[in-house]
Image (cartoon, rainbow, N blue to C red; front, side):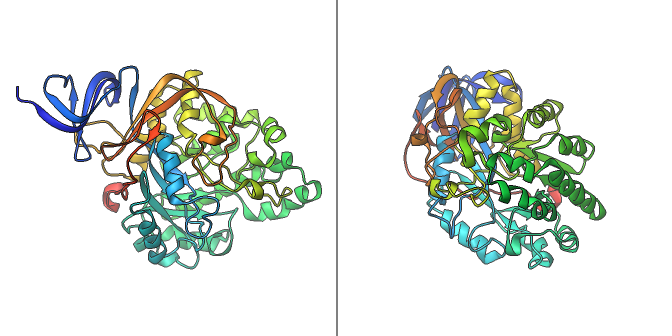
Length: 448
């Protein structure tokens, strides 16, 4: 048989295909997966990599990151954020609209797309913020190239991005067909309860201020409003037992995303150890809520795990609580944490793939992503399930330079990362230059 030539040939790995885990070779050419199977005698490549002992996963997609560009690049930017992504095995990201200026209009989106070109190490798309100022234009805005969809902040935002008025929410929901992502906390309740923590200045009371009731009230409200206009929702960073119980009854319309920090950190210990470095919105909560999240994973209620990477500088985080900002790094540690949970028996590798790759691709209608199959894009994450590493601040690429997991030992680690068929991380080391591309989405009719 005549030899065929590829750009990259991976030999001897355990490949997570739609059939399950298979010990096969994989060939990539022109950014696509072009062959699977025993390719030793029939294929050659410029880059032939022995990956025996490694698992080959569909590229990890982080559907919730804040890369702070434009306007807040002292704590993160697109180059550093995506560099951290690929070092952590992430091949695609959806970036959020609360930058300066806010991402509300086509020109704002284009500014981000232009900034990412030739600077992003992984593939990318950007959310448009849903607002009273642009509600009637959202049906057009959400279908612009490079748009991940519409993101609505019911709480924890400011200015035109805060959509806590029911009439505004109805207008936003009516204009558009794509699945709408939502941060669900009840702003009125948060404002009323802020005095609790202003009086104490105790970060351990963060979950008391932003309690489970504020989350449930907002989640119930947006699901009710969405049902009125037949709009699909994606509820982000769900953190409570009560929300999961409610959302399990609405899965035909609503998909659910959770974060690694809600699965990996626990109150009150995290606040006592880390102070405001553990401060997130919605908060890291106690064992009862964390156990509910793991049950929801096992029961199939959870569709996606996204990092909610939201960095601030250590100087900013050191402000007295509650004036310290909420947010932590996460894109680079998303996969190591989940691999460690796999090794601890909390989820299977197949479920990890569904939560971080197949799930996001299916829910958001990504073209060519989410599975290892002929003709799909060659976005691949290669991991060593037995590798033991210690996470350190010095490993974190983010401009903020820290992680709440500094000093944590984990088992399972990303070794190689391929983006569009190119090895951008090899043997844990960055190589080449950033050449990430804009993610492509199916048209609205095919998404429904």
